[in-house]
Image (cartoon, rainbow, N blue to C red):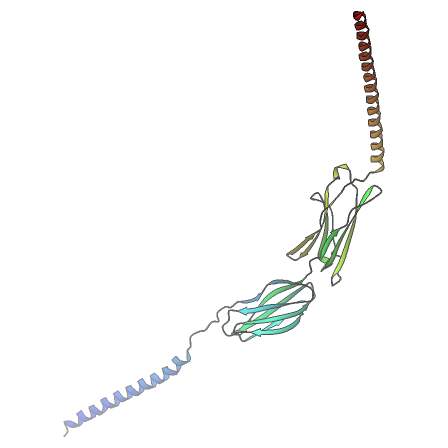
Length: 288
């Protein structure tokens, strides 16, 4: 019995040691579990783009236009449009919004849209331009007043006038150009440009044209008139005196040449007539 006692104590101590180790291992595992579960991988938001199209659009004064705000964000959190123009209908999809703008009368307006994705907001900008190409560009027939031509060009129903440039060309060369940037009135307008032109013989039969050009921040609209031909040239006082003198000299030369020609012709006729009469007398003597 005494021999079995140490063996029993040894077995009890071994069981207690193994159980304590297991308990400590379990407590360690439990202690490590919460620490491991509290650590999560870092998440970075992917970049996304926002686009407002068309970026540049032109409409007649009082017209309307649709702008589309789209994004690469799969699940936008918010969107909107910032503009001073009158808004109409709105149509939306998963990653886009379309906005209608009504009664556009300002010649140029910036429109901005935004989309928020994963807490970040991005913007896009477009420009809406209202303009009206001239209904007509008419160059009236030139009027000769004294020693100068009066040219009158009429540009009708154009907008905006402040961005209009009117140019006169003669034979493809610019003879006058005027910018109307001082005019700031809104609405359609008629413009009449008057220019006084001094011309000479070299300008005879040269075509004259009138050109209207709208410069709208990158958008250029052009119109032109039918050509008008200068069928006469203006005379200055000096030119008139010189011309009259030249004509008088030319007339004197022609008269002198004509008189010399007539004298020479009379002399020749007299010689021919004398020769004929002499031959007639000689013939009559031979007949007798």
